[in-house]
Image (cartoon, rainbow, N blue to C red; front, top):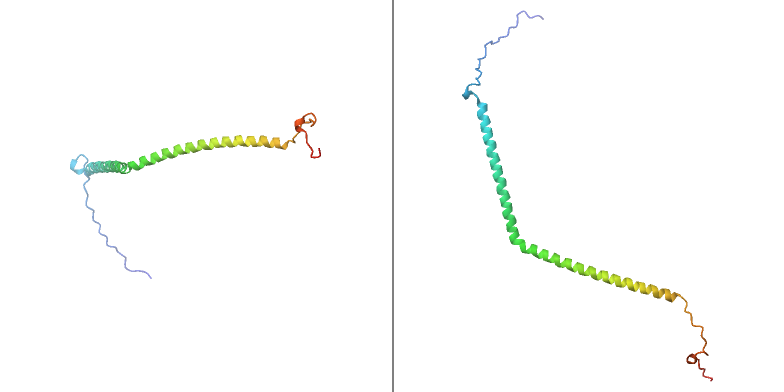
Length: 142
């Protein structure tokens, strides 16, 4: 099938309005400079506020530590005193243990010497009973 009529599109061919490009030399036409100054001012204000907040938190922390020290200072002193006492007791007990170990070692040495003597057979003197009248055996028969 063939079309007998041509297809015509209606197109509005109008020129868009021409916008004027601002001149950089014109002070009122440069909004970037004002934005830059505003951004710098806001950044400076934020830095100042953050610094002030940090300073206040550090000061508050110092105050809290000072209050805790004043409240609990005696507890820390008691702990330090107790540690000193325990350390002194530990030294005393270690010295006692060393002394008792030395005494035990000496007794162990004495026991080992006595054991070696007991293990050796006893040798009696070869002297006869006639030569020594005090050691003569008296028989009941006479």
